[in-house]
Length: 128
Image (cartoon, rainbow, N blue to C red; front, side, top):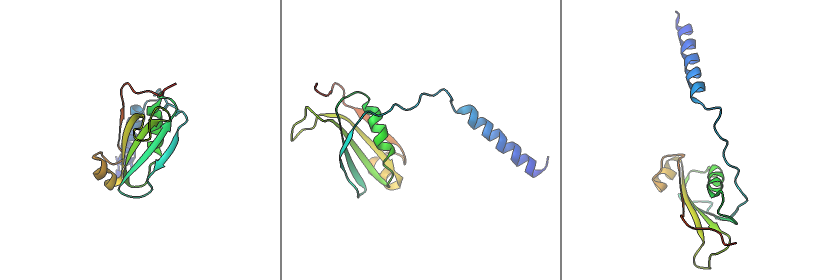
């Protein structure tokens, strides 16, 4: 077998392995319910993004949607609050999340580049 044929065979084998590992029956990401970004830092190595929602349902989808849109190199700290039930001094916090973009984001958050971390606040909900 000549060198070109060997490289072609290896490339085809790699493509077959990657195709076999991908799942065609994986569930699509949940569609995020309506939310409003009430604060977003535009500069700095550590940036805060504050989001308000009207329901505690599907807040992970909200975090995933917000995080997907954060692309500038930085460490992002996402706060998801209920739009009701808080006070002027204390938010009605439903969840916190982090995202690292680039080396500076990794250093700022302690996460690997491109990684996220999400934690819902157990027992918290939006008042009716």
